[in-house]
Length: 487
Image (cartoon, helix red, strand yellow):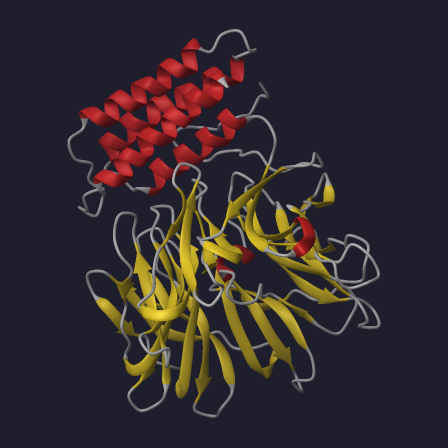
């Protein structure tokens, strides 16, 4: 069993495995009966969400997929089309669906065991959910009765909250971090279009531009670092930017061409475009502007060209906290086919392969290195939602995700320490296991299960009760790790 290091209990930070140059396992997530499905997001425990056609290919529904339960149809708000676009660590899913009559769409929220909940509107005819955090704070945009569009936040307790604008008639929220910092873009009174940041205490602030009249913020990490795209003076070109409260907006430059940008494209959740350490991913033109390559940017290394799979184009989709980047690229001079890729600093760009067809694309990944997207099947007659995951070392991958899941619950200190202690002990035992002694990590995991079952109610630091469904999921995850050790 490969050795992994789990760092200090106090920090609760993990060194998690990432895909290497070894060819990953390709998993067909199936469909809801039709010939098309696609995955748009995946959380730390491997829950995948997206959209799938039903039998007959005339109706499309949002889905949630887990390794234990398979693909679950979330239904719609009465219409014939819907898509799930984001999922948090607690399994809460958001997206949008057409309502009855298919004349407009509403944002929805879904939790395991529940039904699709209509988030309503701010008085207009439509709403759309874009991102959510671990606390269940949802952000997006909604129409108002006067025809304007405003960014919103939504919680089960407060419902929709209008975030206002920077003075114009339009704003939309793109992402929210764990602290409730919301980012997006808004029209101003002078018709300029600027990136914004919003907090419940400070309201909406203008992040400015790189000299032009346009900017949009698409992602924010836990440290409050905001990324997006802005026009330069004259508005003829656009560059990717990083904004912080202390340093303002800085230009990330290009790979030699005139344009760079940070945007994975809808409906992929934009929160995947900057990780906890401030690594930013996006796309840039090369000298001559005839090629576009995916890039990775850091404060120490600047902008790095991730290359392609053989053509002149690659498109970035996401980066995780280990620095693994995924996206899509054409593997040769002719277009198509298109192939999903994974990139690491040590292994470079790797073609993730397909489900037997000629095309695939990657849209998101989690800290475990599980990549999701879609792939055509043999004969290219259908396209299915797909997961790519690293071969081997399954116990460490699963245990890392379980520790993350328990940490994300934000339990009161006593129960949190009690539940994390046996999990961290299991990780230390796994480091020492040479294939002949599995009793110690299994014993620690069984202790976690017993302790979890012995606690009648788990309560968060905010006084919220953890649902029984979440407790059951934690038990299932621990049992899955035990099974993987013996497997």
